[in-house]
Length: 198
Image (cartoon, rainbow, N blue to C red; front, side, top):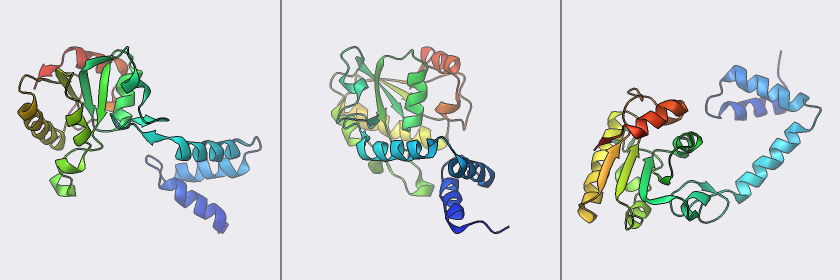
């Protein structure tokens, strides 16, 4: 059966979303076009609102609806600690576990020579500006060669500015090659509680 052109275009666009294969894209496309309760219209409106109003926090790089996100502007967060994560998904995973009360910094990736990603292409400049009140940097990066290289390069860079900085890395429970956002809350809590000096 030949699919209608507009439906085929919809499925093709849905399939570009991360984590969705052809079958999932087809099911989601069918749901959206067959929906009788106007969920599709609500999704389109919500997407439009998000695209228009969501921005990146000028301090940490997380999602925000203002220049500075709620975490960075909160007086209740411990500003002496910054947890460095690769992406916003990892930050949300740590925050969802509801145990860490410090600040975050989203790198936006890790150093990867094979993909031509150097330290200068990551969200580093703002991190260096935020170090004044910080006495501990916590690395919550995935277990990979690229993440380890990023850690060593950042540590070297930060130590030149603040030699007394304490560096720790999340410890047990995160297997090699895994992402932070796949870990359950208990694993994340134990990883932070048992973090090791870097």
